[in-house]
Length: 371
Ligand SMILES: [Zn+2]
Image 1 (cartoon, protein in one colour):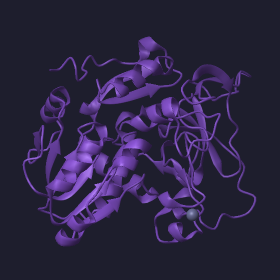
Image 2 (cartoon, rainbow, N blue to C red; image 1 turned 60 degrees about the vertical axis):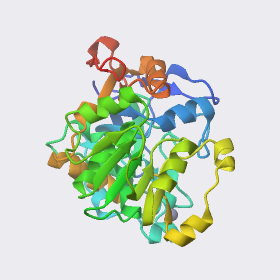
Image 3 (cartoon, helix red, strand yellow; image 1 turned 180 degrees about the vertical axis):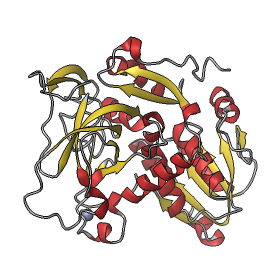
């Protein structure tokens, strides 16, 4: 693919959400990179449960109309003008990006000045602008991103592997906040892509993962996957007490089970949100928290440094992700990808904007077909 506008065309394939519940697959103008931004040709973008929620049900942080897509890997094809005034919060690594660089986009743009940013929790920045929510994301052939948010992809890493850095970053943030220690029992509720990445990352940190997944198809898929850690167990229900419980399923029953499984001084990580009605109805015993010295830990998104750590982990080869891609789809088949996420019939869905259907290499394996 050549740089946009070189042939005077200047338009691209994109998915645009104009109202919650539906989306349009359109040709729209290629965006212009603003000061301090890069124009990125999107090579692969991950579809996650958050995108499904955003498109079909809306999201707290969504501004419309919007091109969704917050898991983005691609190549810099143009640079915008330098920022008019030096951005004091831009970190050193944003200095040297050039056309042709392969980059992972940290999905957040943070202010660098507010209390959260100052304490290294820019994911909670009060001015946070998230790609795919507040500004356009990766469900398009091209997207713009601030240089501040870019991370170079190590040479040893494929783009398909690198795009896992976004969901993996969120898992690393959760495990960091839970203060997961070596030798600890790590309970994970839900064996979707996030639960599976939590399992693999937890094992690398020296914990023993216990994955709880009632869906037998999915449990078999992740338990039998080549990247499954030898130390991990997979079961339909929790069979042991855990030091850290991470709920990676938006199901209040999972939270109820996770609370019951906590050891004394155990930490419950609220990783998946609940639908408002389920959240309103959920009850947690403060007396149990009191008597067992439990800790309640919220985890939302990730910081820039988690993106760097995730790419390092992936590049090191100890954390395998290629066995988790169940669907490789052109952007025109987004509906199929959304259905796979909604029905939990796949694992990780990748989209390839600008690539015709026949060029997207298909893997036949889905959760349904492997069991
Ligand atoms: Zn901030």
